[in-house]
Image (cartoon, rainbow, N blue to C red; front, side, top):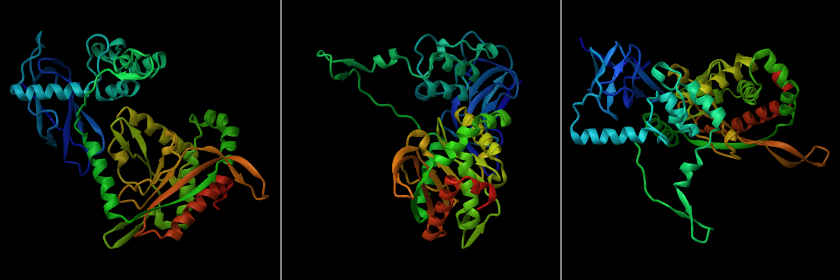
Length: 415
């Protein structure tokens, strides 16, 4: 008896998703709980498991279709896999378009036949430029796993092959200026996550009265503290002591004096929170995601660093859940990890403020005694909704953050 593959419950307030990828072809053998399809929601990518074992039947929905929770998207038939994949019910034009979309979603195989990969494995392959045909799979039926790709990254490096690069350019007869070997363009459908990011950020610019104020911070004290205690900290807590713990603590301290930074506008009311859930902007293969560190104001340095480190790893493999990205009362975005010197971050609605961190660089500054010295400096930026937060409050908030970072003992004695 055939089994129906349905769209699972996606989370609170999420009623639909987009089919981003088929992971099983018609006629292919399927085991129970095998991933059948990849669904894109506004926040995360979800794999649909097989409800039973059998043979993959026809696709009822196609790539790019928007499907609601509970909708039937495919069938699993009884029996064994055939030697060649079964034909689908797609029309020729639809089938050709589907094949083009699937090809654009797959990384090019540099050597041999492209193996079947889950979305999380595929993202790692694309991110690190690994040729999946050269990696031996240790998963079920020889499927590639995340561990296989990460091991390949360690042994082969994360740079795309020079052979692939050589097909893009060739030297001119004079041997100097490169000549473009081929020209072209590629169109890819925006992921549902990217569409949502675009709408939310544009909506923030149109609705909120956005303004950004800056300050700079001498990172000497924090860097000295990390250097002195990093080995003991990691040995005791099993996690590295980073910068985000200091800034999360400093932001929580500053919010006590400037509560409007940790508040939101709801209609004609202002909602003040007596806790601080910090959204941490993390770069993922499909776009920026903001998982939430709950009750960051009451967490230890180790708990904060552990949470952020875990979010970063799972964002790259697509394993963050929707519940982990819900809510948040304040955001910290660290563009410095990518080399940004200065930026004006955009708030994450309905939040009212975001703290932007930037790269640390040696700059000459004038000390209190009038002498000039090179110090590791960082520009910090606070973008805020001027409807709720006044300029004086924004400047005060940054000043408290600056003082706490330049003298970390303030974080211990709540000054």
